[in-house]
Structures are given as C-alpha cells and as structure tokens.
Image 1: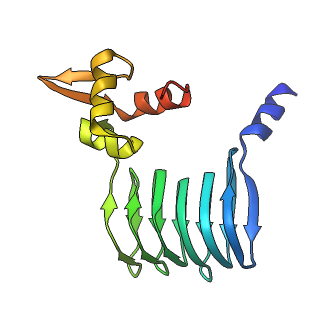
Image 2: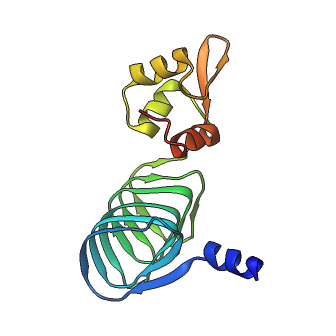
Length: 169
C-alpha cells in the first residue's frame, strides 16, 4: 500500500489547456502541462511542458522538460532539456543543459547550454546576482565552491542543492 501511495505522489499530473489564456501559470509539483491554444505571460512548470502544434505562446518559460511543436516567442529556460520538434517555430533565447532540434524546426535566437561546472561569471548570470556577491560567497565559504589553480569553480548540482536548502541570501 505504501509503495502505491509513493508512486502516485511522484507521477506527473496531466493538464491540457486548449483555450486562450493570459497571465502567469506556476506549478510547484510535477505536472505534464500541454498548451494547445494561445498563451501570453509567464509559465513556470515543474515536470514537462508541451507546446502543441497549433499553440501560439508569447511567454517567459521556465521548466524541467520543454517540448515545442508549435510557435513560441520569448525566453525559454529548462533545467533538463528543450526539444524542438519539426513543426516548432521559436523566436527567443534558450537556456538548457540539453537541446534537441529536429530537422524542419525553426529557431531564431541565442542558445546557452548550462554546464556542470560554472566559473564565477557564469554562476553570477545563472543566479542573477552581481559577480562580487558570488566572489564574496566563495571567499567566505557560504556557497559550495572549489579552486582550480587560483580560479573559483562551482558545481551546478551542489549550487542547486544549496539553493533548494534555502541557503542563498
């Protein structure tokens, strides 16, 4: 019985949006969100976000796995991967550790592949803080870091755990 309950908690819930929406959608628990209509605003999805073939999205998008079949204008940031299917048309910048672009997909913008190791500049951009703040945290031992020669380096996984633990200030 307990095993079944745990499995239910970790499964993604499927949500489909077929109409036009405007605003901000944010999911704190894993979901599989499918946008098939028009959406404008902000999307924050834990789990999978799927932009359907007939969808038109003008948004700032953050999620784990983002799969695009339709049209997207805006910034896309994925913690796991972005997949642009052959019918995708994307106008905006992408940030993701993994990116797959199918033949026929159209992409206009810049792509940043987040690596496993950050230098101080990369970490400052990743955390959206000042470079001096990152260097102060590293020097004082407030953030997980190590030195390669004289340069500070930061493991993305450890930094993400540090953030999740609420130690960022």
